[in-house]
Amino acid sequence: MMTVKETIAIAADHAGFRLKSLLKDEIEAAGYHVLDLGTDSPESVDYPDYGLAVAAAIESGRASRGVVVCGTGMGIAIAANRSSRVRAAVCHDVTTARLARQHNDANVIALGARIVGEEVARECVRTFLQTNFAGGRHERRVAKLAEASQSRKTADVSV
Ligand code: RB5
Image (tube, rainbow, N blue to C red; front, side, top):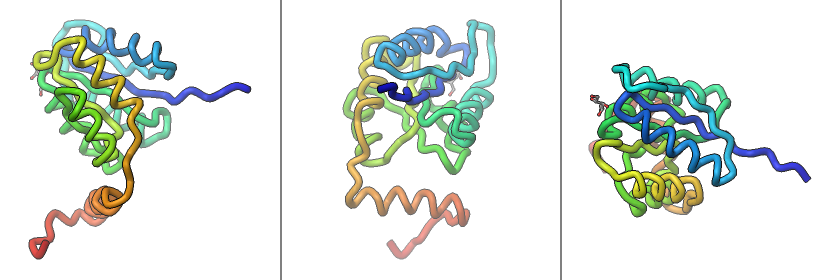
């Protein structure tokens, strides 16, 4: 029986492009198809373009989840999170990667190539890919995020 591989979109700016290529191999070795959206050199680029590219791939259904890398992980995560379909989490270790999936149902992991070592980054991605959303009480909270991005509601001060 042929199984369809899940597609993981990956992108990085110049600060993350080297780590991106290592992570790409890691993701493929774990049995996923990789959609590489660049960048492919150390030439300076703008991280929003790459975070937005991963968000667009998720919005269009070309990828189900994503991995983004910049110097800190933060700028590219902020960019990806402009999409209401994206929950991008900056992760620094296996625990944050696991909880981002279990509690937040994060569909994009963001890593800082200047912050985490290569082996930690690999472990984060492996954990992110293999961990399921825990559901339960977290369903309601994640649903509120979707609701907020639909209605542009920013806060409910009564809770
Ligand atoms: C690029 O120098 C750096 O600002 C970028 O990679 C990232 O860390 C931004 O959040």
